[in-house]
Image 1: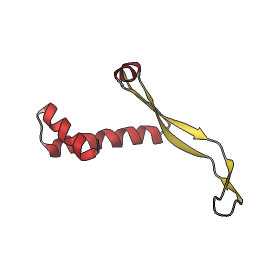
Image 2 (image 1 turned 120 degrees about the vertical axis):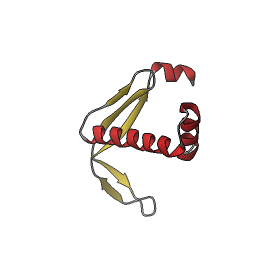
Image 3 (image 1 turned 180 degrees about the horizontal axis):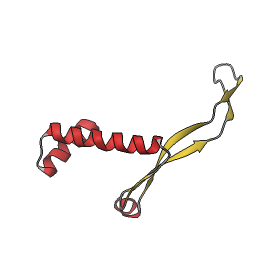
Length: 89
């Protein structure tokens, strides 16, 4: 399912226009991103938890030359599915 299909499904189920569903989805994504950027986490009971994870700096290899390269440390978004979601899948 892509974003357009999700927006169609939300608008159908909620009885709202696709524009309103798009605005709602965009607002949700923006709120999650803003919270994660601030170092927090978002927990939706029954669905899952969005959080930030730190990846340490490490060495990698250039696949073309085999040369060792340094990969910088960075923060990445992480999602852990909740118990109810896991049970439905």
